Image (spheres, rainbow, N blue to C red):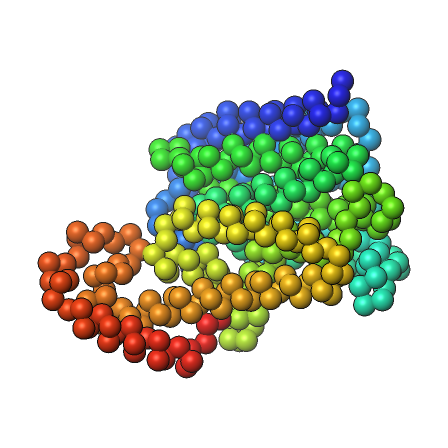
Length: 403
């Protein structure tokens, strides 16, 4: 049977399992009152079941086991074991609560299993800072650090509908296509099993009304674990540049593919530590929160970030010849420039609203409708106020920090 059939099977089977299981999970969650309460980290405004990660886990695990049967996938049982650990930790956190330190210990245990037992780890830095092969202890530390960063990055961006799942679909799709072209069918099946399960979840999460569901920590911890495996293997399989479809500057390319979750995590951690707070303390400083502050809906903010992330993949691959340092500079310049422009736009809007009452009508807050706002009938009497408010806003831009 052609290998592509197994890839299609992995996607279709995981999609089917997710789609069929989510309505049942939602029904049970409503009966048992297992809901997500709006908090300082999430942008949710209503109670919604948080057990979507169960469907993602079932779809992924069963699909990989069935579709991947017959293909040699080194360490598959340990990959599934590590994902299972994260599944149960996330499930307990969604239903009860798990302290951050206990979650970190579980993440370290999962990373240890992947590194030591499955031998999924970095062995080469691709010439970054003049270093190629690295020793086993350094490999363990670096790989463990990267896995922990990925697990927490996907946990942190799971704040608005469809964002974490959408970013994962894009990244897993890029890695999955490359694995297939390069002849690594086992990791292609791994990637497309994840895509299928996430696609089913994405529909209910973004477009569900009566059947809306969140992935919760159950899902986000699973995503980070699987994505870390795909990223490490993508880098390892590109060490030898003479292989077909070899990618130069693989570390910088993989960073560019996942630029939103990685850069946003680094950014909010830096802000929190600068403010003297724990890097894991909840707030609404994420980029998706900034988009909501502009008046975007969850769908608009999500699809804006997904579109930018998907389109940015093209220049990342085209500029791989710049080398790791050159491409990382491009990645950081793009990310920092985008955040600064977003911050500038937000501050202009806020200053206009503050300085000119009339602009509070023209630029309503999120979820406000123009027809519900008092004074709308007077909008044709204050054109001068509009101009004065805009001038004052522009004149104060140089006094504002946009981070």
